Length: 150
Image (tube, rainbow, N blue to C red; front, side):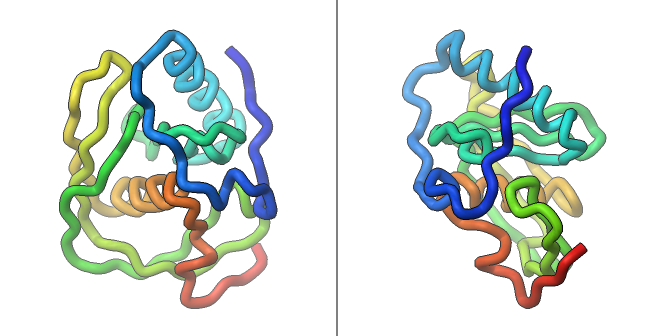
């Protein structure tokens, strides 16, 4: 396992639309493993592949309920609205109030290539939306009502 360097704001890869994963190879499994190690090392709750310099539609999340590995995630349903503070491992020292859906339903492949449906609310909903935004080249500061230094 390896700890990746987290790419920070200003890097082009964070503004690119990430490329879908066409085939789940051993390299994708290794990417997932290393992204989880990096997430835990950084004390984060979510990490998208572009944040480690890889333009692939891959996300890992752990909001305290065990790790989720998402390949080619797509939000298929949203409900309600929630305004709360967010931060980002790629934008250290900055937080911002961001309006997100209160609940989401996401489809994604797992590392075995099986389609999974994840329903999230609260922190999981916010994290799913934040990380999927990364795959579109969108950062939370683009959506923040206001930002402040931590």
